Image (cartoon, rainbow, N blue to C red; front, side, top):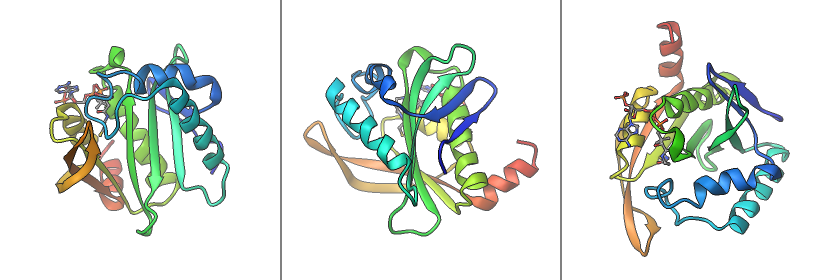
Length: 187
Ligand SMILES: CC(C)(COP(=O)(O)OP(=O)(O)OC[C@H]1O[C@@H](n2cnc3c(N)ncnc32)[C@H](O)[C@@H]1OP(=O)(O)O)[C@@H](O)C(=O)NCCC(=O)NCCS
């Protein structure tokens, strides 16, 4: 499915492009925004390479990765990066992740973004299960995932090697019928 563009009340998620490198680097090069992520702050070159790879994977069939720019609907400003990637070894399952620029945290955009990604996953792609993982200290992610309707599942021990040390991940998921039930209940 290409190109993807989905909106909510205040956000538009659209395909990422090479013109987005500086705005994405402002997030993925920032120590605060990446403090709980699975990698250290990226250089501008690294961000450019990631975006170039994302653009190739966007038009590869079958498509297994959706790397999307999170933009504000009114200003069109890029304020975040979101990714939904099909699991290579599980049928109809995907993992999601992403980050927002610290200047727009706590405005409800994180919850809104997860809602858009779940709509893409379940309504458009017909998936069965979507999951996400966060660092144990990432309280913002914990609250956002719960608020968006995911359930906490468990802990993957020493899942990530970052800043020279192994780190656990806490995982969350939502299933197709839970998403549809939330829709029937007036989401
Ligand atoms: C995680 C992130 C996407 C949340 O986005 P956000 O737009 O700030 O979240 P929302 O405004 O939708 O808030 C959702 C909930 O999280 C809470 N929250 C947000 N930031 C918080 C923080 N720093 N500390 C505690 N709670 C926080 C909100 O109060 C809200 O809780 P509520 O349901 O009880 O009202 C954002 O903090 C971010 O981009 N962080 C850096 C990257 C990252 O951690 N990505 C997730 C990887 S798993």
